[in-house]
Image (cartoon, rainbow, N blue to C red; front, top):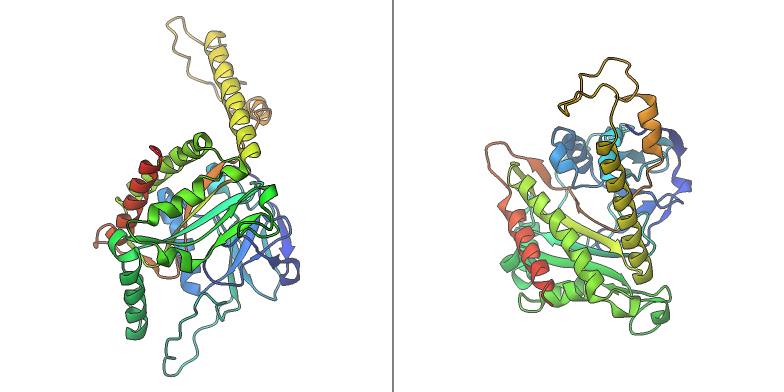
Amino acid sequence: MVAMTHRPLRRSQLIAFDHAAAGHDGILSDVSGEILAKPCKQAEIDFYESTRAHPDFAYYIPIHCGTLSLGQTQDVPEAAAVLPSSLNAHFSAVTNHPHSATAAGAPQPWVPSNGGQLNTDCAIVLENVAAGLRKPNILDVKLGARLWADDAPPAKRQKFDDLSNITTSKPLGFRIAGMKTWMGAKAAGHNQAGLDGYKIYDRNYGRALTPETVREGFENYFFIDSAGITKKFARRVIKRFLGDLHGLQEVLEKEESRMYSASLLFVYEGDGAGLQADFETEKQVLDLETEQQLLELETPQRGALSNGFPDRPVMGDEGVGSEDEEDDDEGVEALPKIQAVKMIDFAHAAWTPGMGPDENVLHGIRNVIKILQELLTR
């Protein structure tokens, strides 16, 4: 378990986050870029906290570090952005937001936010999934043909149904909500790339795609020759994403939930030279670990029996759960971060015992998997 340290975090210490591909405005980041503060409603905080009872699913969402009342001082983990394998060490909310009850009176009419900032003083603090990447390429895929929850007013239902009907949401169960891709240092200021070298595909880009052309959007995300993302590198990244998506699909097929307007957030290293270096480093680390494992198998261990089976460990014995063993682990080089995909946006999510798996979300995930499999033959 990773040791937790805390530090005070104030609103004045947060800066605007500039890597959001889609969603509401107002997302903030600490200076290190390791954690994000996302304005949200209490329902989303409650859902994140409920995932402690669903650890298999929790692996596929950003690590929940706590809550923050904007303008107040709160404590959040200093080492918030960690690898998923350390999830359990960071999962408990660090603070409880003093969220006040809704004022009494008649319900207010629904007004579309149009991607604007939520009117809330509450923020959920999450790991930044893109932290650790030099030039993160980011893709937000909105899941579901139905995008509204049961408590949605008629006006919201109609608006979201109309949007679903004219986009890929209805036929495919997903649509591209936004993308941000690094086009390479030489592309800065050219070919629709900004001065930072990033090309932004806004929500209108994804809404204009059809079932026949949506593959083009994924091609634009993965195959970026100007940044050194060759077909070979892109396919290696896609295969990794497919492994993650198959795992998420398997988990959701066993859960009973409804997650309306949730998204898949894809990130991967967009610097081709850096990506190549990461692949090489990963191979070296894995080769070294394999070599060490083979060496351990060949080296006689104290307490081993002649038939090859180890003797039962004695409490306090040096090679079993001892400090020496922990010290050895510290010398193992960490694997570089190459890619990640997480589910996000749980403002309208709930566990629904007795209602079966969320086929609305699963339909979209299966179609994303199908398209990524097609890209492997490109």
